Length: 222
Length: 157
View 1: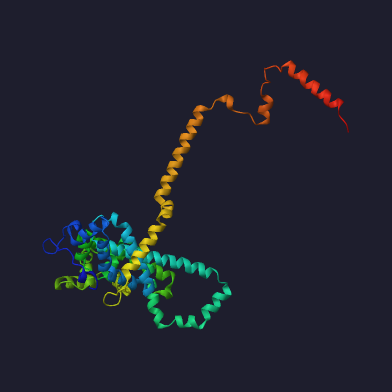
View 2: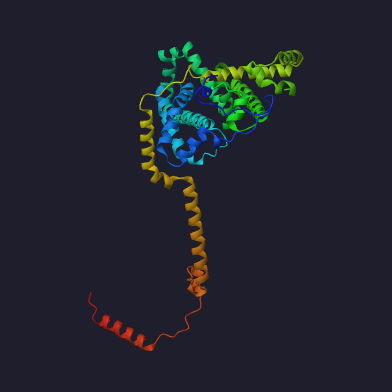
Protein backbone atom coordinates (compact mmCIF):
# COMPACT_ATOMS: atom_id res chain seq x y z
CA UNK A 1 0.00 0.00 0.00
CA UNK A 2 1.35 3.37 -0.84
CA UNK A 3 0.06 6.36 0.83
CA UNK A 4 -1.78 7.28 3.89
CA UNK A 5 -0.83 4.66 6.38
CA UNK A 6 2.82 5.70 6.48
CA UNK A 7 2.27 9.20 7.74
CA UNK A 8 -1.25 8.95 8.98
CA UNK A 9 -2.12 6.41 11.62
CA UNK A 10 -5.57 4.86 11.35
CA UNK A 11 -7.62 4.60 14.48
CA UNK A 12 -7.24 1.16 16.03
CA UNK A 13 -9.73 -1.31 14.63
CA UNK A 14 -12.02 -2.79 17.21
CA UNK A 15 -14.36 -5.75 16.90
CA UNK A 16 -13.86 -9.46 17.06
CA UNK A 17 -12.21 -11.60 14.42
CA UNK A 18 -12.05 -8.85 11.83
CA UNK A 19 -15.83 -8.76 11.63
CA UNK A 20 -17.93 -5.64 11.24
CA UNK A 21 -16.06 -2.84 12.93
CA UNK A 22 -17.33 -0.11 15.18
CA UNK A 23 -17.50 3.53 14.21
CA UNK A 24 -14.60 5.83 14.95
CA UNK A 25 -15.29 9.11 16.68
CA UNK A 26 -13.12 11.45 14.65
CA UNK A 27 -13.65 14.31 17.06
CA UNK A 28 -11.49 12.50 19.58
CA UNK A 29 -8.59 11.79 17.26
CA UNK A 30 -5.49 13.92 16.92
CA UNK A 31 -6.55 15.09 13.48
CA UNK A 32 -9.99 15.93 14.92
CA UNK A 33 -8.28 18.24 17.38
CA UNK A 34 -6.33 19.82 14.53
CA UNK A 35 -9.54 20.41 12.59
CA UNK A 36 -11.18 22.04 15.59
CA UNK A 37 -8.23 24.41 15.89
CA UNK A 38 -8.54 25.38 12.23
CA UNK A 39 -12.27 25.86 12.66
CA UNK A 40 -11.41 28.24 15.50
CA UNK A 41 -9.32 30.23 12.95
CA UNK A 42 -5.93 29.03 14.19
CA UNK A 43 -3.63 29.76 11.22
CA UNK A 44 -0.83 27.64 12.67
CA UNK A 45 -3.11 24.61 12.72
CA UNK A 46 -3.96 25.23 9.09
CA UNK A 47 -0.27 25.42 8.29
CA UNK A 48 0.14 22.06 10.01
CA UNK A 49 -2.59 20.56 7.84
CA UNK A 50 -0.94 21.90 4.69
CA UNK A 51 2.47 20.60 5.67
CA UNK A 52 1.10 17.26 6.76
CA UNK A 53 -0.97 16.56 3.66
CA UNK A 54 0.71 18.50 0.85
CA UNK A 55 2.80 15.58 -0.40
CA UNK A 56 -0.18 13.26 -0.34
CA UNK A 57 -2.44 15.70 -2.17
CA UNK A 58 0.28 16.47 -4.70
CA UNK A 59 0.83 12.74 -5.36
CA UNK A 60 -2.86 12.01 -5.84
CA UNK A 61 -3.17 14.83 -8.37
CA UNK A 62 0.03 13.90 -10.14
CA UNK A 63 -1.16 10.28 -10.34
CA UNK A 64 -4.30 11.41 -12.12
CA UNK A 65 -2.95 14.21 -14.33
CA UNK A 66 0.77 13.39 -14.72
CA UNK A 67 1.74 17.03 -14.95
CA UNK A 68 3.71 18.82 -12.24
CA UNK A 69 2.46 22.33 -13.05
CA UNK A 70 -1.15 21.23 -13.04
CA UNK A 71 -0.55 19.27 -9.85
CA UNK A 72 0.90 22.35 -8.13
CA UNK A 73 -1.95 24.57 -9.27
CA UNK A 74 -4.68 22.13 -8.28
CA UNK A 75 -2.99 21.33 -4.96
CA UNK A 76 -3.09 25.05 -4.08
CA UNK A 77 -6.73 25.09 -5.09
CA UNK A 78 -7.44 22.06 -2.90
CA UNK A 79 -5.92 23.66 0.20
CA UNK A 80 -7.71 26.95 -0.46
CA UNK A 81 -10.93 24.97 -0.63
CA UNK A 82 -10.08 23.17 2.59
CA UNK A 83 -9.41 26.51 4.27
CA UNK A 84 -12.77 27.97 3.26
CA UNK A 85 -14.90 24.89 3.84
CA UNK A 86 -13.36 23.28 6.89
CA UNK A 87 -16.09 24.92 8.96
CA UNK A 88 -18.53 22.46 7.42
CA UNK A 89 -16.38 19.40 8.17
CA UNK A 90 -18.66 17.20 10.29
CA UNK A 91 -16.24 14.52 11.56
CA UNK A 92 -18.29 11.73 9.99
CA UNK A 93 -15.23 10.53 8.10
CA UNK A 94 -11.53 11.00 8.62
CA UNK A 95 -10.03 14.32 7.58
CA UNK A 96 -7.98 12.44 5.04
CA UNK A 97 -11.04 10.90 3.37
CA UNK A 98 -12.53 14.37 3.15
CA UNK A 99 -9.32 15.82 1.69
CA UNK A 100 -9.11 12.91 -0.74
CA UNK A 101 -12.66 13.61 -1.92
CA UNK A 102 -11.92 17.30 -2.45
CA UNK A 103 -8.70 16.47 -4.30
CA UNK A 104 -10.29 13.99 -6.70
CA UNK A 105 -13.22 16.35 -7.30
CA UNK A 106 -10.84 19.19 -8.11
CA UNK A 107 -9.02 16.96 -10.60
CA UNK A 108 -12.26 16.03 -12.30
CA UNK A 109 -13.36 19.64 -12.31
CA UNK A 110 -10.10 20.56 -13.98
CA UNK A 111 -10.46 17.75 -16.55
CA UNK A 112 -14.00 18.83 -17.34
CA UNK A 113 -12.93 22.45 -17.87
CA UNK A 114 -9.99 21.32 -20.00
CA UNK A 115 -12.31 19.22 -22.16
CA UNK A 116 -14.62 22.21 -22.69
CA UNK A 117 -11.64 24.44 -23.57
CA UNK A 118 -10.38 21.80 -26.02
CA UNK A 119 -13.78 21.54 -27.68
CA UNK A 120 -13.97 25.32 -28.06
CA UNK A 121 -10.42 25.39 -29.45
CA UNK A 122 -11.13 22.59 -31.92
CA UNK A 123 -14.36 24.19 -33.07
CA UNK A 124 -12.29 27.13 -34.37
CA UNK A 125 -10.55 24.90 -36.92
CA UNK A 126 -11.88 24.34 -40.40
CA UNK A 127 -12.29 20.77 -41.67
CA UNK A 128 -9.20 21.24 -43.83
CA UNK A 129 -7.11 22.32 -40.83
CA UNK A 130 -8.27 19.29 -38.88
CA UNK A 131 -7.35 16.90 -41.69
CA UNK A 132 -3.94 18.50 -42.04
CA UNK A 133 -3.34 18.17 -38.33
CA UNK A 134 -4.41 14.53 -38.30
CA UNK A 135 -1.98 13.70 -41.08
CA UNK A 136 0.87 15.75 -39.69
CA UNK A 137 4.03 14.20 -38.39
CA UNK A 138 3.06 15.06 -34.84
CA UNK A 139 -0.16 13.15 -35.21
CA UNK A 140 1.68 10.13 -36.52
CA UNK A 141 4.05 10.33 -33.56
CA UNK A 142 1.05 10.51 -31.27
CA UNK A 143 0.15 6.99 -32.27
CA UNK A 144 3.38 5.78 -30.73
CA UNK A 145 3.70 3.48 -27.77
CA UNK A 146 4.13 6.39 -25.36
CA UNK A 147 0.60 7.48 -26.03
CA UNK A 148 -0.77 4.05 -25.40
CA UNK A 149 -0.34 4.82 -21.73
CA UNK A 150 -2.07 8.16 -22.20
CA UNK A 151 -4.95 6.46 -24.03
CA UNK A 152 -5.29 3.95 -21.21
CA UNK A 153 -5.32 6.74 -18.63
CA UNK A 154 -7.88 8.70 -20.64
CA UNK A 155 -10.05 5.62 -20.83
CA UNK A 156 -9.86 5.07 -17.07
CA UNK A 157 -10.58 8.72 -16.30
CA UNK A 158 -13.58 8.62 -18.61
CA UNK A 159 -14.69 5.35 -17.07
CA UNK A 160 -14.61 6.88 -13.61
CA UNK A 161 -16.90 9.70 -14.71
CA UNK A 162 -19.60 7.07 -15.30
CA UNK A 163 -19.95 6.25 -11.61
CA UNK A 164 -21.04 8.41 -8.69
CA UNK A 165 -18.59 10.56 -6.76
CA UNK A 166 -18.80 8.20 -3.79
CA UNK A 167 -18.19 5.10 -5.91
CA UNK A 168 -15.28 6.80 -7.65
CA UNK A 169 -13.62 7.75 -4.39
CA UNK A 170 -14.07 4.26 -2.94
CA UNK A 171 -12.62 2.60 -6.02
CA UNK A 172 -9.68 5.00 -6.08
CA UNK A 173 -9.00 4.55 -2.37
CA UNK A 174 -9.09 0.79 -2.87
CA UNK A 175 -7.26 0.35 -6.17
CA UNK A 176 -4.96 3.36 -6.34
CA UNK A 177 -4.23 3.99 -2.66
CA UNK A 178 -4.34 0.30 -1.86
CA UNK A 179 -6.51 0.44 1.26
CA UNK A 180 -8.14 -2.69 2.56
CA UNK A 181 -11.86 -2.98 3.24
CA UNK A 182 -11.11 -2.71 6.95
CA UNK A 183 -9.15 0.51 6.46
CA UNK A 184 -11.86 1.96 4.23
CA UNK A 185 -14.42 1.22 6.91
CA UNK A 186 -12.29 3.05 9.46
CA UNK A 187 -11.74 6.00 7.14
CA UNK A 188 -15.32 6.47 6.01
CA UNK A 189 -17.18 5.59 9.18
CA UNK A 190 -19.15 2.87 7.35
CA UNK A 191 -19.10 -0.78 8.35
CA UNK A 192 -17.15 -3.38 6.39
CA UNK A 193 -20.20 -5.04 4.88
CA UNK A 194 -21.45 -1.72 3.57
CA UNK A 195 -18.04 -1.06 2.05
CA UNK A 196 -18.07 -4.50 0.39
CA UNK A 197 -21.54 -3.96 -1.06
CA UNK A 198 -20.66 -0.47 -2.27
CA UNK A 199 -17.43 -1.68 -3.84
CA UNK A 200 -19.20 -4.54 -5.55
CA UNK A 201 -21.83 -2.23 -7.02
CA UNK A 202 -19.18 0.26 -8.09
CA UNK A 203 -17.22 -2.52 -9.81
CA UNK A 204 -20.37 -3.71 -11.57
CA UNK A 205 -21.04 -0.19 -12.84
CA UNK A 206 -17.45 0.15 -14.02
CA UNK A 207 -17.67 -3.13 -15.94
CA UNK A 208 -20.89 -2.03 -17.62
CA UNK A 209 -19.47 1.42 -18.41
CA UNK A 210 -16.33 -0.17 -19.87
CA UNK A 211 -18.47 -2.41 -22.08
CA UNK A 212 -20.48 0.58 -23.28
CA UNK A 213 -17.40 2.70 -23.96
CA UNK A 214 -15.71 -0.16 -25.78
CA UNK A 215 -18.77 -0.78 -27.94
CA UNK A 216 -18.87 2.91 -28.84
CA UNK A 217 -15.15 3.10 -29.69
CA UNK A 218 -13.77 -0.45 -30.09
CA UNK A 219 -10.32 0.72 -31.16
CA UNK A 220 -9.86 2.82 -28.05
CA UNK A 221 -10.09 0.03 -25.47
CA UNK A 222 -6.67 -0.23 -23.93
CA UNK B 1 -22.73 -13.06 -9.25
CA UNK B 2 -23.42 -15.66 -6.60
CA UNK B 3 -23.35 -14.65 -2.92
CA UNK B 4 -20.44 -16.89 -1.93
CA UNK B 5 -18.24 -15.28 -4.58
CA UNK B 6 -19.47 -11.78 -3.86
CA UNK B 7 -18.79 -12.23 -0.14
CA UNK B 8 -15.10 -12.93 -0.67
CA UNK B 9 -14.60 -10.87 -3.82
CA UNK B 10 -12.51 -8.14 -2.19
CA UNK B 11 -10.25 -10.65 -0.43
CA UNK B 12 -9.83 -12.43 -3.76
CA UNK B 13 -8.93 -9.21 -5.59
CA UNK B 14 -6.52 -8.29 -2.80
CA UNK B 15 -4.99 -11.75 -3.05
CA UNK B 16 -5.80 -12.39 0.59
CA UNK B 17 -8.09 -15.43 0.31
CA UNK B 18 -7.45 -18.29 2.70
CA UNK B 19 -6.76 -21.76 1.28
CA UNK B 20 -10.36 -22.85 1.79
CA UNK B 21 -11.70 -19.68 0.17
CA UNK B 22 -9.42 -20.09 -2.84
CA UNK B 23 -10.59 -23.67 -3.26
CA UNK B 24 -14.21 -22.61 -3.03
CA UNK B 25 -13.56 -19.90 -5.64
CA UNK B 26 -11.91 -22.32 -8.03
CA UNK B 27 -14.63 -24.94 -7.67
CA UNK B 28 -17.39 -22.42 -8.16
CA UNK B 29 -15.79 -20.64 -11.11
CA UNK B 30 -15.12 -23.93 -12.86
CA UNK B 31 -18.86 -24.55 -13.04
CA UNK B 32 -20.33 -21.02 -13.22
CA UNK B 33 -19.73 -19.19 -16.47
CA UNK B 34 -21.54 -16.00 -15.39
CA UNK B 35 -19.45 -15.59 -12.24
CA UNK B 36 -16.27 -16.38 -14.13
CA UNK B 37 -16.99 -13.87 -16.85
CA UNK B 38 -17.98 -11.06 -14.44
CA UNK B 39 -14.99 -11.76 -12.23
CA UNK B 40 -12.63 -11.56 -15.22
CA UNK B 41 -14.11 -8.19 -16.17
CA UNK B 42 -13.79 -6.93 -12.61
CA UNK B 43 -10.17 -8.01 -12.41
CA UNK B 44 -9.56 -6.22 -15.70
CA UNK B 45 -11.15 -2.93 -14.60
CA UNK B 46 -9.32 -3.16 -11.27
CA UNK B 47 -6.03 -3.51 -13.17
CA UNK B 48 -6.95 -0.63 -15.45
CA UNK B 49 -7.75 1.79 -12.62
CA UNK B 50 -4.33 1.14 -11.17
CA UNK B 51 -2.75 3.17 -14.00
CA UNK B 52 -3.65 6.19 -11.87
CA UNK B 53 -1.19 5.16 -9.17
CA UNK B 54 1.40 7.87 -8.66
CA UNK B 55 5.06 6.95 -8.91
CA UNK B 56 6.41 5.24 -5.78
CA UNK B 57 6.72 7.55 -2.78
CA UNK B 58 4.96 10.81 -2.18
CA UNK B 59 5.92 13.65 -4.46
CA UNK B 60 6.57 17.04 -2.93
CA UNK B 61 5.44 20.37 -4.35
CA UNK B 62 8.14 22.99 -4.88
CA UNK B 63 9.41 24.75 -1.70
CA UNK B 64 7.26 27.64 -0.46
CA UNK B 65 4.02 25.80 -1.13
CA UNK B 66 2.33 27.05 2.06
CA UNK B 67 3.06 30.67 1.08
CA UNK B 68 1.55 30.14 -2.34
CA UNK B 69 -1.54 28.58 -0.80
CA UNK B 70 -1.93 31.59 1.52
CA UNK B 71 -1.54 33.97 -1.45
CA UNK B 72 -4.33 32.15 -3.20
CA UNK B 73 -6.49 32.31 -0.11
CA UNK B 74 -5.86 36.06 0.18
CA UNK B 75 -6.76 36.54 -3.49
CA UNK B 76 -10.00 34.64 -2.95
CA UNK B 77 -10.80 36.66 0.15
CA UNK B 78 -10.44 39.89 -1.83
CA UNK B 79 -12.73 38.60 -4.51
CA UNK B 80 -15.19 37.22 -2.03
CA UNK B 81 -17.34 40.36 -1.91
CA UNK B 82 -18.30 39.91 -5.55
CA UNK B 83 -18.54 36.16 -5.08
CA UNK B 84 -21.12 36.83 -2.43
CA UNK B 85 -23.30 38.55 -5.03
CA UNK B 86 -22.86 35.60 -7.37
CA UNK B 87 -23.38 33.05 -4.64
CA UNK B 88 -26.33 30.80 -5.62
CA UNK B 89 -27.67 30.80 -2.05
CA UNK B 90 -27.61 34.59 -1.94
CA UNK B 91 -29.20 34.70 -5.41
CA UNK B 92 -32.01 32.41 -4.26
CA UNK B 93 -32.63 34.58 -1.20
CA UNK B 94 -32.61 37.72 -3.36
CA UNK B 95 -35.21 36.22 -5.73
CA UNK B 96 -37.41 35.14 -2.80
CA UNK B 97 -37.14 38.59 -1.18
CA UNK B 98 -38.02 40.26 -4.51
CA UNK B 99 -41.04 38.00 -4.96
CA UNK B 100 -42.20 38.73 -1.43
CA UNK B 101 -41.83 42.48 -2.10
CA UNK B 102 -43.82 42.22 -5.33
CA UNK B 103 -46.59 40.31 -3.55
CA UNK B 104 -46.74 42.84 -0.71
CA UNK B 105 -46.78 45.84 -3.08
CA UNK B 106 -49.35 44.15 -5.31
CA UNK B 107 -51.70 43.44 -2.43
CA UNK B 108 -51.26 46.98 -1.11
CA UNK B 109 -52.11 48.49 -4.49
CA UNK B 110 -55.07 46.16 -4.97
CA UNK B 111 -56.39 47.12 -1.57
CA UNK B 112 -56.07 50.89 -2.06
CA UNK B 113 -57.21 51.32 -5.69
CA UNK B 114 -60.94 51.93 -6.46
CA UNK B 115 -63.03 51.39 -9.58
CA UNK B 116 -63.32 55.11 -10.26
CA UNK B 117 -59.55 55.37 -10.60
CA UNK B 118 -59.65 53.17 -13.63
CA UNK B 119 -59.45 55.08 -16.88
CA UNK B 120 -61.06 53.58 -19.96
CA UNK B 121 -58.60 53.40 -22.78
CA UNK B 122 -60.39 51.32 -25.41
CA UNK B 123 -62.38 53.39 -28.00
CA UNK B 124 -65.58 51.37 -27.34
CA UNK B 125 -65.27 52.08 -23.65
CA UNK B 126 -64.77 55.79 -24.24
CA UNK B 127 -67.78 56.02 -26.62
CA UNK B 128 -69.91 53.91 -24.32
CA UNK B 129 -69.08 55.99 -21.31
CA UNK B 130 -71.89 58.32 -20.13
CA UNK B 131 -71.49 62.04 -20.81
CA UNK B 132 -70.43 64.15 -17.98
CA UNK B 133 -73.47 65.23 -16.08
CA UNK B 134 -71.88 68.49 -14.99
CA UNK B 135 -72.98 71.44 -17.13
CA UNK B 136 -70.32 73.70 -18.57
CA UNK B 137 -70.52 77.06 -16.80
CA UNK B 138 -72.00 79.66 -19.13
CA UNK B 139 -69.44 82.30 -18.12
CA UNK B 140 -66.67 80.13 -19.48
CA UNK B 141 -68.52 79.71 -22.79
CA UNK B 142 -69.00 83.46 -23.16
CA UNK B 143 -65.38 84.12 -22.35
CA UNK B 144 -64.20 81.58 -24.90
CA UNK B 145 -66.45 83.05 -27.58
CA UNK B 146 -65.02 86.52 -26.96
CA UNK B 147 -61.49 85.24 -27.26
CA UNK B 148 -62.28 83.56 -30.60
CA UNK B 149 -63.94 86.71 -31.95
CA UNK B 150 -60.89 88.81 -30.99
CA UNK B 151 -58.60 86.35 -32.70
CA UNK B 152 -60.70 86.38 -35.89
CA UNK B 153 -60.86 90.14 -35.94
CA UNK B 154 -57.11 90.55 -35.53
CA UNK B 155 -56.21 87.73 -37.90
CA UNK B 156 -53.84 88.64 -40.70
CA UNK B 157 -52.56 86.39 -43.40
